[in-house]
Each structure stands twice: as structure tokens, then as C-alpha cells.
Image (cartoon, rainbow, N blue to C red; front, side, top):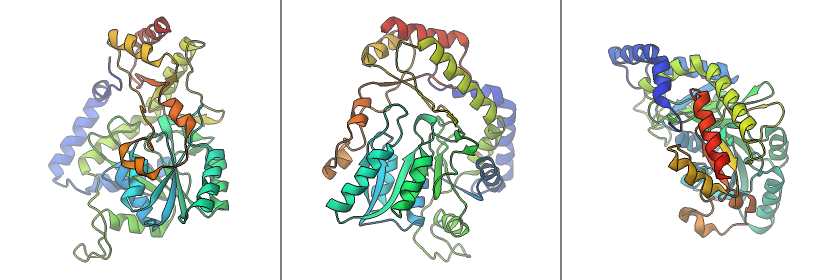
Amino acid sequence: MQFRDLHRQYQAMKAEIDEALLKTASSGAFVLGDAVAELEQQLADYVGVKHCVTCASGTDALRMALMVLNIGPGDAVFVPDFTFFATAEAVAMVGATPIFVDVNGDVFNIDVDDLSEKIRYTEEHTDLHLAAVIAVDLFGQPADYIDLEPLCRGHNLYLIEDGAQGFGSAIGGTKACSFGDISTTSFFPAKPLGCYGDGGALFTDNDDWAYLLRSLRVHGKGVDKYDNVRIGLNSRLDTIQAAVLQVKLKHFDDELKAVNDIAQRYNDLLRGKVTAPIVPPAVTSSFAQYTIQSDNRDAIQARLKKADIPSMIYYSRTVSQQTAFAHLGQQPCPVAEQLTHTVLSMPMHPYLTDQEIEKVTETIIAAV
């Protein structure tokens, strides 16, 4: 059993993917070929925004978003403490200071009340300029943008959506990667929409920002690529990756329905045994991970391993607890810290069989 079975996905789409790869190889246009521009328009249409600009990774996408917003030294950027390292890493890479915010223990995303308190504390106790909030759509569920957007407006903070794990999710009829001022995602292979290497994208309705992003991803080029008008990055999506993503995007809504059906099956079988993920009304999750909570986490994981069932702990420590940020010495995030001891992610992908789902759940129930 695979944690996220990319082999089964390839077999399901093999003919289309092979054709797309051969077409790209025949074209000889391996960097910013036609498939890249085509994909960008398709992604923008899917999300419901004006511009999509692809790049080399989700981490680069976050860094480029901060660069476009002129965020740098002396700026405070508020980030959830329970997420992958890259969210805060991108802040540090532009010279700004990440301020760690606690999360909601039910849905794992940034806690709006604690964010309000951390904003107040930062205003009163530091000399930092309040610049932005990065909200993460963790495990496939969009953050609480209904409350985040007015809070950020009230404090003149940019709101950046880190949709690395959330592509395809939605609040009502509004798709992830369309919230806030600018949004980012990742196409790492294990993500809901993944390519065959690294890749990322940014989404915005702002024409000027889109123009700057296209410049930044090619060394800050101007009209002439040998006239570099600003300091940028080398961060382009390969044409091969774009071709793969075009094929996968055609099947994405079917896969999205499948993972939601599987999540409901998990929920039904595990009810009363562990704490299953909670998806609020009007929210659709893309289930990048299916993450349970249990005080018996270690015993469950040991039993799963014995049964040759893969599982993962996202995350075993908070971002602020990691060595690179230990020097910041910020305010505690107790919910995030507690989650590091209780969360466990199960196999989750659109190609899980009923027999595999039953094996996973029976093994968990036996452990608890």
C-alpha cells in the first residue's frame, strides 16, 4: 500500500501523459514552452482569477509573492506555527521576521483570535512594521478567509494565501488560490495537483503584480532578456512539468470527488475511535492528507507499520521549535505544540480501494 499512490495515477492516465511527454520532447521547447502559457490560462480559469504565473516551486512562489509586495528587513509577517517549514523560510529569505501564530485544533489552520492577539503584541512590544499574514490551507482545507480578510484590512496587512496543500478546495463557490491579495501553490508530486518534479504558481487579479512576477522568475528581466531591470530569480516551470499538469488537470475534479468520498468512508469507519478531520459547512477539502488525532498516536503508528501500512506525522515539531528559528524566542503556541504529539496522517489518494480503506481502519481500531 502506498501513502499517495502516484504509480496508480500514472497507469490511469498513462496514454495521455505519455503522449504529452513525447510531444514536449519532439518540440525541443523545454523551458517556458507553449504548454506553460496554456497551463497558466487553464489554472487561472479554474481558480477564477485574472492571472496565473508559474514558477519552479511552491517555496519560490511564496518568496516571489513577498518580493512583489516589497516585504523585507524590518517587516513582520504572521505565519501559522503548525505548517511546513517553507512558509516561514520564505519570510526569512527576504529578510523579514516571521511571527508565529497558533492554530485551531479542530481544523489545523491559523487561529484568527490568536492572530489578533499576536498583532497587538507585535505592535506594542516590537519595532517591527506590520506587513502581511500568510495563511496556510493545511492538509487540503482552506483557512478561515471569511474572518481573516477583514482582520487584515483593519490592520493594513497584506493577506497571502499559501495554497500549497489546498489547490482544489473551496469555501462555498470560491476556489482556493483566489483568496487574499495574492495566492501561491505547489505542484510537488504528492500535492493534490502534482507534477513529476518541483513546480509552483502564483495567482492574482493585479495586472502590475503579474507583470513583475513574470519578470522576477527570469532574473528580473525587462523587455529584452539581457536587460535585467531588477534583481530576480531563476524560477521557471519546465515545459515537461506543464504538460503533465495539463493532463492531470483534466482529471482533477474526478480525483477531488474520489478523495472526499474516501475521507467520508474513513470518517464512518473511525467514528468514536479517534478524532477525525473536521470540515466545516460550506467548505470543500482537497485532502492533501487525511489526518487523525489520538493520544495513542505512537501505538497506532506502530500497529500500522507492523501491518505494512504507511503513515506520516505532519508535523513532529512546530516551525518555531526548529533550530533555524529557535533564536527568535517568540510567544508560545500551545495548540500547535500539542498537535505535534497527537496527529497522524493515513494513506490518502483517489485510487485507494475499499479493501485498503478497511485494512487501515481495522488496524487503527485494533490499536486503540
